[in-house]
Image (cartoon, rainbow, N blue to C red; front, top):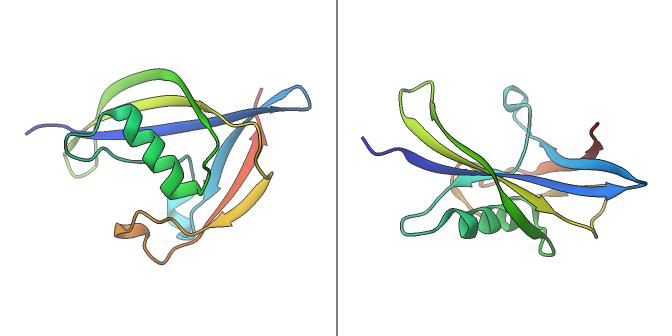
Length: 121
């Protein structure tokens, strides 16, 4: 079976001289706090996919994909293999927190995510 390609976006910014990373609280409590991510579509490259996913999940339009941080193979609980691609993305002009209803459809349809930027060391 061919691995399912997934992209993850570590959206970062510098505020008051400190690094921040964007996360969101999923409305389903068991899903917890996450970073923007999604599935690569057929014949889509991973950089285009991470751009699309960031826009669909966060509503952000002004950001820059810096570079690929890492990629790996990971086995999901259901036995499927995911080829995961982790990207560093920078944003300079965004709110500290906001709510957004993802536009990508699928399992996220009808949900609203609460996004916030938190300081990292």
